[in-house]
Length: 316
Image (cartoon, rainbow, N blue to C red; front, side, top):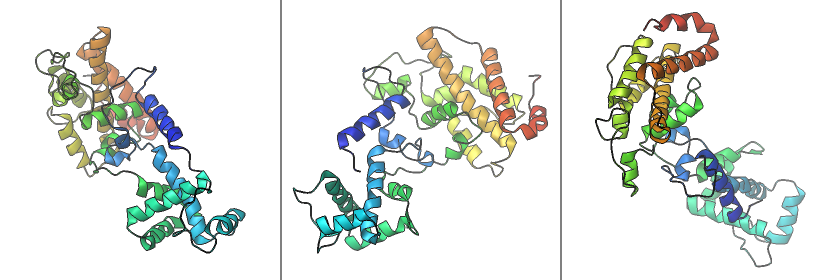
């Protein structure tokens, strides 16, 4: 059934609060809109279902049943009581009709408006069915809001990377972390300086990896995995990793796991210094990242354990 919009908004709010770790009723600054969070990972989102659109896509199943005249008591009853001598695409809503039927007609009008006509809407609805089965996911993909595709999604979102590392790395790649420079654009003006190196303003490009502290972390990781290359910023590394032909090779997956782990650990260290007044020297943090990456890689690719251990420079 088509749930009330107020209920759907409350459900969306619960999902949003969980995602951003809102533990009380106080206002929290969201650096990324909810609609962009609900788009697929290859569009910069987190592949979360937007409940309002998902509910409409599910209601579309009943519209498809009416259009296809599926043999069921529900279809027969609504045809006799609501549609009568008309058809589902031209019948109008009346005050005596139930809210569920009005919701069904609302989804119908939305499809007609989206496609540009009744014939086009019927063809679209038919394309969402495979045989005798209506596919809700196809209709949802039509109704959801779209965003430009990003090329780095497979670099950050992959089976090797730890999910929380991918989450922070995705925000960093889109300049959506709440750093001092970004907060200034939201009207929150703080003293702009990098807490890690104390030599420059805190921006996304500086923090990953122009800062002397983060640059030392990245240089140590590259030496550890025996990877050539100089220290560059995060976006150049994402572009370089995207263009590699051996994307599924376990050596490239080590590099990507190191990349997301480094971004996450540097962000965690930055927050620890600001909010807890605790800091970790480069060597200690580097060893921690090495341990996390080693455990992750050996867990995911146990069959290549000897090759993985041989490719890591534990003497560094």
